[in-house]
Image 1 (cartoon, rainbow, N blue to C red):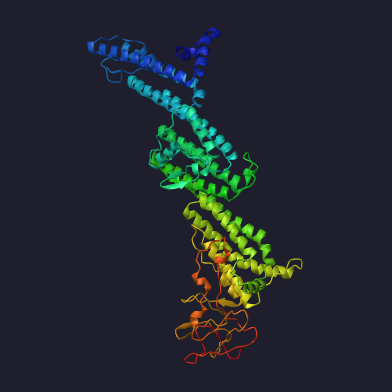
Image 2: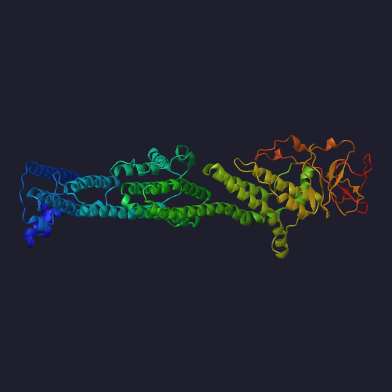
Length: 636
């Protein structure tokens, strides 16, 4: 220490040689060696200063005064009391013992400061636990030194603060580069959450983020890293989710790394409170980097060209990113609270940056949910829509009647169901219940609007391009009913998926309006009635039943019964129970692999019978209606 402190006073190469050797030796020491050296040095210095204080106190108690003629003016020392503090004295100049004590304290401060400056670069590379130990030991020595000298050791304090700031800056640079490398090599598959990392998250959520659980030394960190990487290759049943306040999240390795870095920065802010304002900015930069980089790699498909070399970006990758974002959003309020506890009240406005980051993460999550819907949209519009031109609902209805088969969907609607089920299988394993319902509510809303539009567009496309196979809406009542029933079956099948919120599909009603036909909902006795749609929105009540008027608004109506071979409507007066649908006894949630589970034989009524025949049935009051069936004016 004497050589390091006196290096500035020597002249010539011979004088500087010992100082240079000391500087080189101190700078190349390992951290443990330096701790052993400096702790021994602190012990020796404090022992000497305690001895000087005792001698000075003895001289004062015994009335012994040893004048130090030149020290008061030359060195500017003030009188020292019996404990070594500045105070009033009966003498104009301090004694030689008090002057020696003050000079020793000043020399100790300069020497230790110079010794720490020689280790500035080495200390910027140590671990957080190493820097914390250095800070605690040096600060304890500084407080004792200030007690002996009676004044603040500003030189030593500023040296400690500069080294802590250098450590934070260097650590942040390393964190940024490490996080970028981890994201670029990320394959976006779930990794295991170790018990230690779960304990860290639990401490953060319980308000104990300042207490670090990691042991000193890099070996512990490396072992955690190595233990997490093979976990991504094992089976899903061995995976452990991250848990925050009762909610579980599936996360990737880079997300765990981000949380570990943020927790270390929070611990730095708690331990080096004078640097808390700097730490807030560092945490914001880390969070923004993860958000922007993951957006580019997954939503922007950058992972295909990054070090990970993914073949494609699929729904599973999007879902795991959504879970990572949800985890960060869940712990962000706890990070904010931990930092607020370390900042003075006038600097709490710095935390507004974290609120902006929360908005950025929420926007990212919203984009991912929209992307999941667009995946289904792209499949339906580009891959499945051409199948519409191969569908003839009139022919399907005719064949179904001849074969007495149950209702099944056409190839277009069946493909829509199949692809939606595949998406559900993936997301049901990856997303929580509330997010799963949100995604599929959006998907169902899209399909509800898009399916009728694609049928209409197929008609217009066939008219515009002669090369395109012509598709036309069904013209027979059987074909119209068949088309509507298949769309209803699609809606029923999609709503039967587990964990989704049932959607009120309006596609069948839209098609009813487009086809100029209406299928009434099943009555209490299980009978399905269908009738043609009217221009009048008026409804009449006969014998307490609602009648859907068809044709003109003429009050005189005639009931039409179809006598065609298809038996769309069969009238047997006095026995309305004979028209029950065979589907009444069918399980409402059928097996998707058993198409015979769906049986539809609704009672319907055509706008006009195929053979032009009509008959009139009368009730007891001669009103010409029965069982709520539709009536037509006599003029028709």
